[in-house]
Image (cartoon, rainbow, N blue to C red):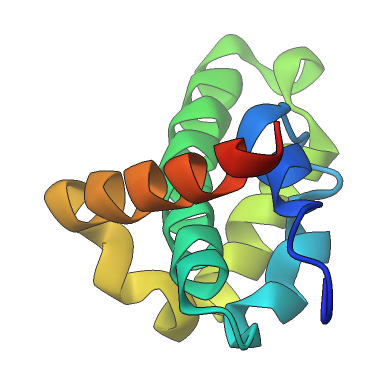
Length: 107
């Protein structure tokens, strides 16, 4: 995406599984501020979702637990400093809306 931000629509529009969400991590340093902050907000959102999913899975027992979700929670916790600003739901929503609007210009 260094010279072509159009692929950001793939990140913004299409669902991303736990197995691949961390592939987005290099984009937290993207030169494009809308993409950079959108990805950071996306990571914050996924951290919250993954933590809730993992807690639910643990309540259901070991057969419901998904290793990818557990790994995602741990890895997102390790890079929390990159997305912590967007733990605030209002700030996160604002950044995600900007990111989606920006990405939709290529959709």
